[in-house]
Image: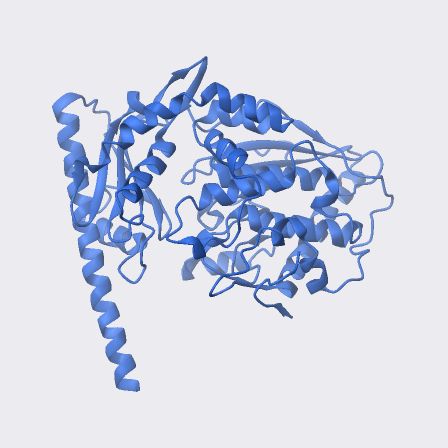
Length: 477
């Protein structure tokens, strides 16, 4: 059955975290607990998720829908798979089941990883069995390879798993799949996104933390009982804060108040932790290892001063603008440097701040224009130009997927890019060249020109397609 409208009353960024967190289960059960000890209906279990529904904006003009039966089916698949790993460990006389948790190195990814950590910690296991998790942040466009020795399962959170190399066993993501990728999703019921979970809403309205919290809470209540969900865990850092961090991180700039599907419970603390999640891998490790809200607050006090640097760069965002684009070129030394003993990477925050500048000038974020940040740095040991682009406006005008098609058609093999309709990252390899000064500026201008032309072409093409669609509609009417 479908639960309508949710209207309830209630120097390298790719690293393995140096800490291995031991996750012990709840009261030991042997043999394994039955697949369900909860006799409630799927709708009742879903509706009992107070963490999610207490944050729901009930004044939405077009509220989302969730298919509770689809979530139930996925939860059962997760339970069968996780229990099979535990049973295998018992047969092999092992005391541990080890998960490698890959997560996007942004606020939504960190929040999802922390929720999954809480879920694993609460999952019931037999006496003598321990669940172990190794956490590994990943760039959105880089997934592997990784070493599989002694790993029982690989979990991907807030990553485009449909574009990943083989070896992902479980995944939760909110990005929309292309038609060609859907068959990949059908091959494993533990690989889920909005569509698989039966959620009808735009991906930016449902960040990965929401999906992770829905699924984790549901599984725990099925496996342990109706009062054993995420809310019952009573952790020093509440699960709700990680939900808020992901919501804020993935939806910084709503077009208007109605665009908020989920609201945050503690806006000030949420803003602090979201910022910490996105200023580099050294800080991200500290966030993952923080044990209390006070530790997170102390971390923010340490790195708050970096924001002045971010503002200085963002203020120049209008330096390269026209009717299609606002953009800025940022050399690596401006966003990657050492701050109080840790390396910080302010590129992501510069993108956010640049978008905020556009808003402060009275123009809704990329309503008509795309925000482009070009940066010069290194990637896997090679000198590269990176192009980050955001467009949060009317998708009837154009979207970034169509822009990428126009760009690659005009410049085959020149740019390597990945992302979705509203956010993408491209890389331009310099093939050993080291650029500086005027030559670097000229190359940045060349790249900006390429993107301007691709965006203009995408808008023109989209206009033709919309016009023809209207023609067909009028003719059929």
